[in-house]
Length: 156
Image 1 (tube, rainbow, N blue to C red):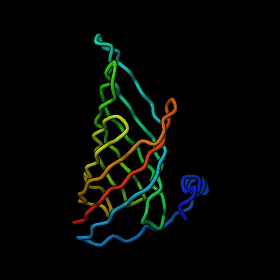
Image 2: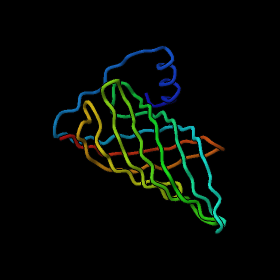
Image 3: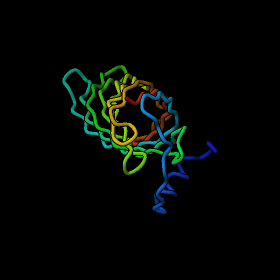
């Protein structure tokens, strides 16, 4: 069921449930997709040009398909530039955890509401993984927001 998975994920975490993940086999390529929310902590450095340097950290939760657990939890950190007129560009690194053993690391090259993703590996079923994908912000309000993503991940 895809409806309201974020709330299901949060409820599951609060209940302390431990769920097993879908097995990924060596040499397999899987396309993952989902929706997520984030809560950001930002620091701005005003620049003489009217723009700003940005340092950001995010706590994120996202649904993930295909998966038995149905969700990921992550932390992201990055730096960027926000021109006086225009959209932010930034480089962000994230570690997404599906289970205690399975975690995926990614780099996001952000331009405005969209990001190109490069998979940097991980642990457990994603150890040594490569891949790419996209992230698109769906809403932003103050220091929180939402996004959709699609990543193709290949395991060695």
